[in-house]
Length: 162
Image (cartoon, rainbow, N blue to C red; front, side):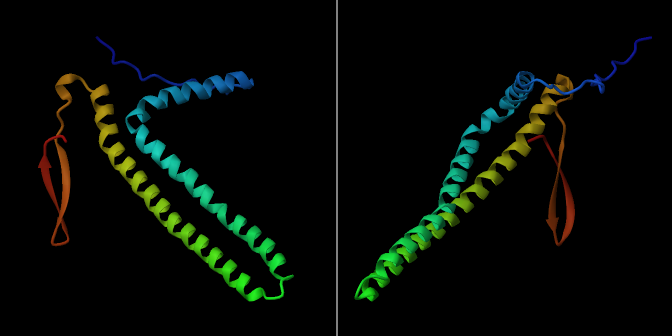
């Protein structure tokens, strides 16, 4: 009588690596395994990281503006006619902060757009890859159930695999 294959079990008594070299090697192995899944999305990931770096630079603008303001006000306080210099400084600060806020809006929108695109494409392709890797060839065609809303009632529509 044939026995069914037993699922592979992870040893629970195995301790995590203590040595720094072993931890780095383990982390590197994990990253190499994850890189296979992230490779099709590398442009989305790079673009999202680039927008994150730009966002971190825009967050530093407030500190530079504050430093400029304090330095300029110190110089303006010694002038005989401070109003002209004060209005010029106020215009520069307003323009810089307004530009920073507009850039921050576009960066935030871009990040959200790219993350949603990444998640939606990943939700489509990852189940397909896992099914094709785990199921035998004859069982790979599975009908997909899609839900649509008609008059606020869910209606099931049977379709083929996407």
